[in-house]
Length: 356
Image 1 (cartoon, rainbow, N blue to C red):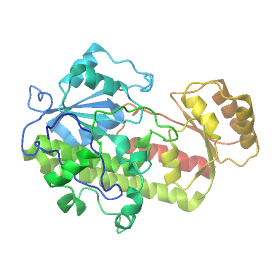
Image 2: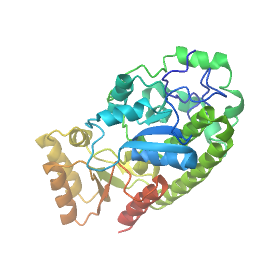
Image 3: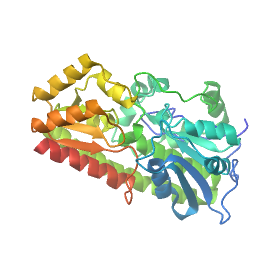
Image 4: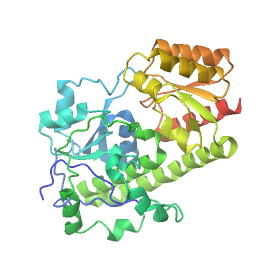
C-alpha cells in the first residue's frame, strides 16, 4: 500500500497497539520535507496536541500548533494561507477529529499533504467505530493497567503486512469526513486514558519517520504515561471522597474528566448541546436547568471559558446565589502550561470545589 495520508486507528483499544504503516518503516518521512535543521515537522490542530508532541519529540521535532488561543474556536476556525503552507510541509499531523477541528481536513485536502495523520477521537472508547473493542480487551486493560507503550500487543499483534492491509480494508483511511457525530463528545483530550494512547501513537509514528531516534520517542512517551498515571490517581482520590456527586456542565468539554472522577453529570443534554452549538436554550430546558441548580443537589457548576451566553450567565448567577462553587475549564492549553500541569490544575480545582 502507498504510505499516503492515513489516520491511526486503535485496533486493541483498551490495550495499546502498534500501528504499522506499510512502506514506511525504516525510511525517511513519506510526507513533507523535514525542517532545514533536520528536525521532523509536526503540525497539531491545537496547542493541546502540540505540547504533547513537543514532550515526546523533544529537540528532534519542530511543532506548529494552528489554534493556540482561547479566543480561537476550533469549531469555526478559519485557517490562513500560511496555515496551508505549514500543513503542506508537515511530516506528521495531529488532529482531534470528530468534527471538532475540521479545518485541518480542509487544509490537508487543499495543500495536497501526504503526511501521516493521527486522529485523537479514534483512540476513545466512546468513538462509534470502536464499539466492542472495550469488551474484547477489557480483561487485558485491567490486568495491572499495563503501560500502553510496552504492552505485549506492541510486539505481536499488529506488525505484519497482512494485518495492516486488513485494517486498511476496514475503511480506516484518512479519506473520510470528520463531521460531528451525534451523541459523541469530541473533547477527548479531557480523558487522560485516551491521551496516553495518543501519546503512544505519536511516539510510534515519529519512530517510523526517524528510526534512529525511535528509542528516544518511546522513552519520552513512557514518561508521559507515568505522569498520566498520576492524573488518574488524583481522579481516583476525588472518586473515593465524592463518588456519585452531581455536577452541572454548561458545555460538555469536561465530562470525560468528571466521569473519571466518579461524578454524575446531571445537566439536561439539550442545555449543554445548545450552548455548545451557540444556539438559544429552549425556555423549558432552561427552567429545568435552573430547577436543578436551585434544588441544592448540584455540588459544582463547570463552565467553558470559550463559550457562554445569557443562559450560561443565568446558571452561574443561580449557582452563586445558592452557594454552589463555579469553576471554569478551557479548550486550549493556557500559556506556560503543559498538558499534565493543566489537567492537574483542573483536577485540583474540581477537588477543591467539591470539598467546599
